[in-house]
Length: 83
Image (cartoon, rainbow, N blue to C red):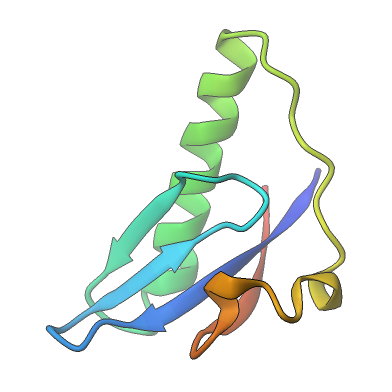
């Protein structure tokens, strides 16, 4: 199964935002930092399910270190989410 990098950012208003550089528009929100990986996994699985149903190609995940310098990475923490 593919493993995608997710970026976890602290929201100044509270909670944590999760995004996936390889899947633009895929965002999730967690109440706590500890919940972020689980929330990210659920969001990723749902997106992949939707893409499969629509016969859309699944992108090849970027190397985890390959996203260094990605504009969304600033101030965030990269985590690996295995689908």
